[in-house]
Image (cartoon, rainbow over all chains, first blue to last red; front, top):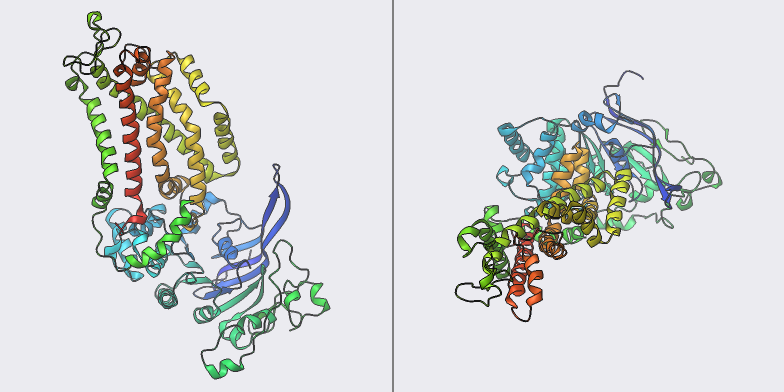
Amino acid sequence: MNAPDNDLMVEVKNLKMYFPITRGILRRKVADVKAIDDISFEIKTHETLGLVGESGCGKTTTGRCILRLYRPTSGTITFNGKEITNVRESKLKPLRSNMGAIFQDPFGSLNPRQTAGTIVGTPLIVHDMATGSELNDRVAELFNLVGLDPGMKDRVPHEFSGGQRQRIGVARALACRPSLVICDEPISALDVSIQAQIINLLEELQEQLGLTYLFIAHDLAVVQHISDRVAVMYLGRIVELTTSEELYENPLHPYTQALLSSIPIPDPKTEKTRTRIILKGEVPSPVNPPPGCHFHPRCHMAVEECSRERPPLRDIGNGHFVACIRI
Amino acid sequence: MSDNTETGTTPADATGAAGAPPKANEFKRVVRVFFGRTLYVIGFVIVVILILTAIFAPFIATHDPYETNLREKLEQPSSRHWLGTDSVGRDTYSRIIYGTQVSLLIGFSAVFASAVVGMLMGLAAAHFGGIVFALIMRFADALMALPGIILVLLIAGLGGGGIPVVIFALGFGGIAPQCRMMCGLALSVKQNDYVLAGRAMGMSNWRMMLTQIFPNAFPPLMVGITMGIGGVVLGEAGLSFLGIGVMPPVPSWGGMVNDGQRYLLHNPMLSLAPGVAIMLLVFGFNMMGDGIRDAVDPKLRGVI
């Protein structure tokens, strides 16, 4: 392999994640759910890469593959210059302390029978990073870091509000001082006012601790706000990847255009002139995706050729990648 | 199953708890909930009395439970023999007092053993899945396919009776249901994101099973375990009747019920008194199980 590029924290190449559908007592494989169908991207150190797409497009699966909660079907994932695609579960432990994960549901992601302090301190115990009073100090420090009163560490998750719970989740993710944090829709289960708080907290923490984020979401406005670069996914593939300014000012892929046209503009005059691109039909099943470009059956600019060949994700200059033959 | 209600109820409650007052001592809260309901308190009192009776049996009993006296056989209750005497003149009251020791010993040991083994099997099956799941659950299915009484009879018969054999036989019969229950509950607990979070942080299998899955799957099993104590005491009675349970001179409630059934018309107290003792024991443990389940439920924290 090449010498590790210091600028790249995560490098994903030709990643595929197929989940087999089995039937009968012999577990005969009848089909695959192609959750991720050959995607490649990079996450640079200290940047926030946004990953957007509608539900079922494979964003969460991508995050979980990088966390190595799944073993990818094929492709490679390189983290800090080290390939982690097929590392055995028992050898993954050092890697796990270097990656944090924040989950979507602040109610389901915290064990209801443990106190907040225990939840935040567990990663430190698992990785033998602190014991005794050192552990207590570190937990208190983490509570302060995410804006919680350390005096509340003996409470159980049920006694906290949604926003506070998500702060506990953030503290747990940061306990081992990871360099990469996978944020899997960290705000979509929260009230709008709380969403802003958590977003601001994540931004502050990134600055303070030099974190790198993979930020998975379906809310485009939020992603634009927090991300340096954004990847748009559709049915297991990345259709467009570029900086967030470029994406919002100059979206090239018809799917991205349709997505962006759905954001209401908070100005009544401009809002009236907004033209929405309404997509026809439903998202096809990832078990049996359409041939060629996955998006062509719903695309307003599709031509005959689109259904024949898969469009490659190509660079059209300035790091703007798009997978469409019509561009 | 219970997880759905959990996520369903928490958001509303959580908002109420957002500005919750400083947390009262957790232990005090559990105690307050538990002792806040009359039925739980009654159950608890019964269990405590039974345990104290077992410990202080020599001081509570009026006679030696093994002392036969053929001149005083089959007596009706009197001031000398409070609950009468049996066919060889032993004092029924004293035998019930000493029988508490036997019943509690067998009940606790058999249920404890089957719960530990069954739950570990169920946890392992649910956590590891795949071939481990298939092997453990097919084994449990095989155990369940044998009629329980035949399995127990077989073991007790081969072992030749006596308290240790009874404990083993009844405990063995309880493994499969405990295993199945645990496996089902653990599988539903596994769906939660906190299990995923545990994997993402690199938690070991043991830590995952014991700190994440087990505590969340266990409370519903508590009721089953306490009921199991009553069931085991009844099972012991059945074995004793067939002569492969607790061996005769040792006083056991089940054995006494069966001894007395021949004199049911003449001297009903002989069967009735140990029967009432069994009933009280089962009732006490069931009520206590319900109470513990409600008291340790974290969803009620801050509410009660």
